Length: 419
Image (cartoon, rainbow, N blue to C red):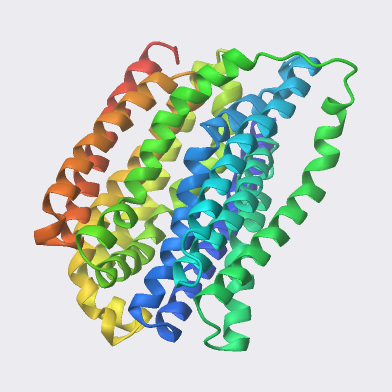
């Protein structure tokens, strides 16, 4: 039984690794295409619209995304009426918030009719709504034991569809490229609905619904602080550089980040596969399983991240030039700091996930709040003189702090039997 379970885990890891790798490749290819067919200024508009939509989804869903993964992972051990109630609320609460946010951006767009900003804000409004459904269903798929499908539908399809259409049509303009992206996101949602509906039907068929809205919202609120803080850290370039530096700085930083994001493939795979395992093990009080899973994840992160990090540090400028073009070679100077930041982030991910899956959302929240304040002070304080380097320095400081905090806290929790 143990051998069968381990074999199943490694097969799931393999499938998920393929899905995450394909998502990263198609994401990178899309931004390579836009970097080559758009000017740096136009490319920064495209990047801004996509990243702003992602930021709005992560914050606008009010922390329910991480709660979905944890609660649905335990669905089989939970009363059906409570699961049904949670499923309904997990769509109602975050989508109500998202619709309000989309209306705000649509209003902003109406105030700028006749400018490029009108098109950009309308696209952000539309993408944010569809993207929210995509992210919600992604969490359901991961929690239901379909991590590979969650990534293929939520990340690979949108980026692949957009890139393929742009390749076939050439320079279609920023607005049209964003419309293509919206189409790719919608296709991903349709696939997710087909995959999820049968697996949730047995819970939705329960005659009654039990709502623990106050409890779920409390948990989500702490997750929102942490998850929102994480998202703001990841999008610090979008918030800081367009106003305090330049659009070119944003394009350079974002491109360097796209390359270094390859370092997150392994921990992302591990999160998708091990999240349900950690949640179930904690719910059942299986401390030994928690310890084994954390040791294995940390070892796999080291094997998967450190060799690639060393390569990127050794050949930064050449890598940027080959991938994005001659204009982006100077962004290679950012690689060292960004790679260090991503390495710290990669090692922290399994340990932060342990907290989220074992009711440690308060620690997760407060740690990210401290990191966000620290990073904000550094980035906003130095951006006017250091430009993109200020954001890279801020991210490195924040991710180093988070790794130390989550690793030490996680060790104490394991020593205490996962409590």
